[in-house]
Image (cartoon, rainbow, N blue to C red; front, side, top):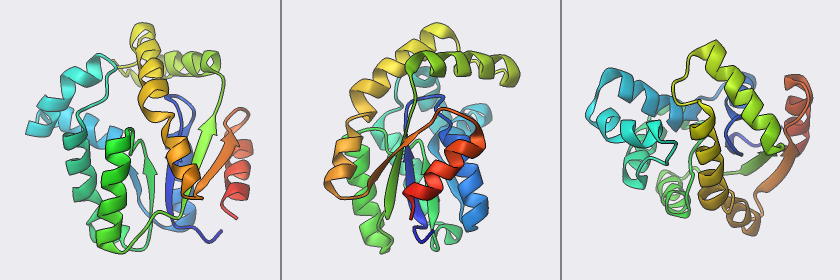
Length: 189
């Protein structure tokens, strides 16, 4: 596997976080999850957290300016120079354009976008189970359904954006963690 600057794209519950952690360990690069960073900011009641909290609780996307600021801070840290796995960013065209600009300034362009897919019913069940096991208050059925709709409207179109750049590889996200990981490995070759 030669690509070390990767973006995992896919709907909520498809396994982006799980696969990003695996890839980060294998490649010795950081997983950069804006969702994790925003949840941490909410828990710490930071300025960014206060701005993000309401949108997250409603299943809406956090404002682009806030997410871009958090991502920029993280991507400029030393450990991201050798590569990174982006998980949950970008989620809109504005964020994607900001990411391209940011990575251009840093001299570290994105090398591959892996779009992980699965049927929505499977994803809703996964997220409801995660809500039980992890106690995630942002994972109730109404919020999950709204997040799915927002994903289809705002984020799914990014597949075309990255396809036009020749970076996109589609991967089936159903099956075991290992099966999906094998498919991702194939997509990175």
